[in-house]
Length: 311
Image (cartoon, rainbow, N blue to C red; front, side, top):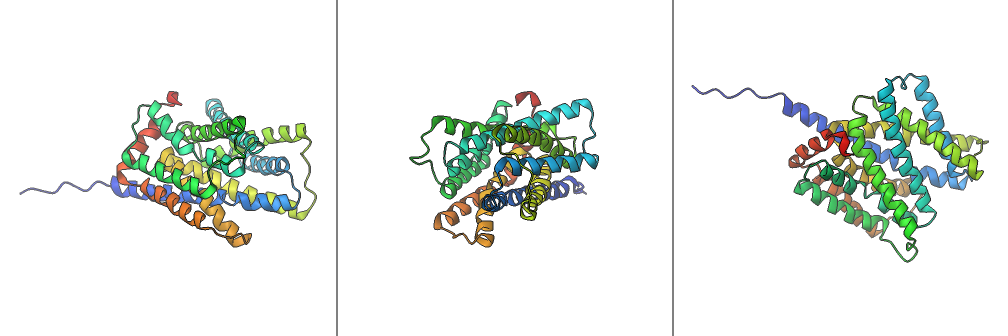
């Protein structure tokens, strides 16, 4: 009599890991989507960008290192500091691009990160699946509709280059975090990113004369909100999501950020909702769903386990 083979315990575990990874990536995107809200409030209160970012990351680093999340071997610390430099460079280049081109175009270039993640995978000899390519095309189309395509004001070649390099570096951060941050806790990764960001923005603020000590309760309220939501929630969730489902799927899920930003602006700032935002948001969400097809899973595992030397 033939006996059925025992059921493997791996598929349910894999499914749970996938669901939790997707959930963490969406939580990270939603938390990051509040940045526009806090930025708008900071602008209304005349709180400069470098002051806001310096205190945001500085206090986060101080808190996490004080709680013991900075304890690592010398090699692990060097790897996380390298990862943090990549993340910080992407952020700085984004702000430099903003000074030359429109915010919508700068955002569009940064959200090219999924394309760069796939490119880095190809360099590591991982061929993308058709679902991966389809999800990417759908997502990029949605981003183009939501944030708009480059216009007449976006002819500054240097600004476009800065925005493109920012997107390439953010893709590199996501891809490399699958290797360099695999053995570190998400809060340890966040501690090191915050440290490098704090040092960088304090230096830039001092050079430009835009570094100040917040002097009102409203200023501190915005800084603490940014410390908690887009930093202590978004960054650890992003790191853990990459560990669970790989950088390619995470990079596509984080492109839902503009959808969350639009929703928060509608709910809390009273901004209107346009047809283009609805259509673009639907395309982005479709791309995020398509990216989770089972046939995509093996490619993602390969991407996240590829040799670090390919980065």
